[in-house]
Image 1 (cartoon, rainbow, N blue to C red):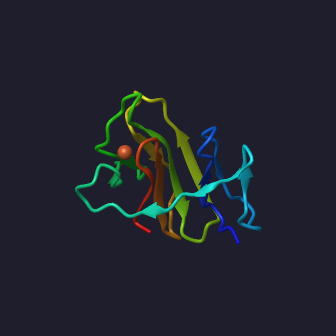
Image 2: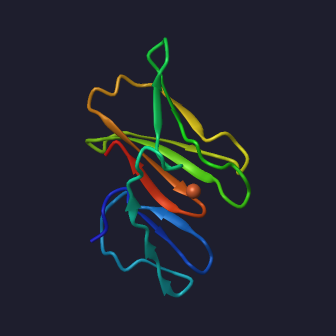
Length: 126
Ligand SMILES: [Fe+2]
């Protein structure tokens, strides 16, 4: 079975998909089985670790000390409520600063997931 919000990648064409509704896990693209992208958990010094700053107005600024080049960049950042009911996603251009503003009271708690074009999927605060 697939799991809600898990990511899969086609190693041939590069398609990346996210599961919105769980089902069988034999996903196929370009005639071959897609790779289930494992989630890694970064330590504080890792470039994929989410730094969360609470701003004066209560918004959260989420940022990363990660390269932003065409060869190595974060493609998207997601803030996901721990009950999996809410997802906020920001897509980034290769040379865009890897950060996003999260506007929510987030009482249910949330974690941060990113997809790096070189290093895969990383989750913080899960
Ligand atoms: Fe990376």
